[in-house]
Length: 143
Image 1 (cartoon, rainbow, N blue to C red):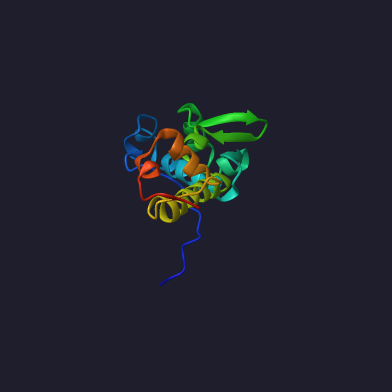
Image 2: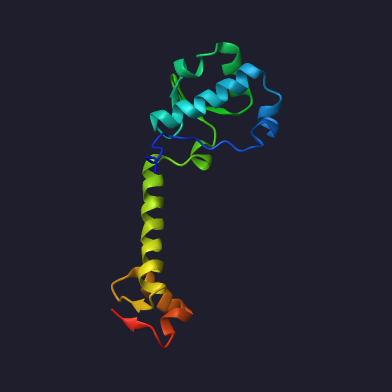
């Protein structure tokens, strides 16, 4: 089995180019927007970018992104990709999401599937509060 892919990735919807803010931009501005999303992901600063980075393809594509509302001024020489945090998951949030999903998966595997109620498990307590069927099943035993 190969090692897991640890590269960073960014979310881009398959209808990205159909978005009204994107579809009428020049090719240079569209490419710049995608490039800035990827750069922001690599930097891990919540979509914040230096103006110099935003002008890497020239002033005209940069101005198009600003005029289209795709870049928001955050200070002198500082810009943010509009709605970046709404659409992208930062690494620290991804780690939290994975940990939460792992804990839930372990609960299902070791408690629900084996019908073992563990009073110290928050998932078991929540299941009991909700009256889930596996908790009240006659074969369920306490840990």
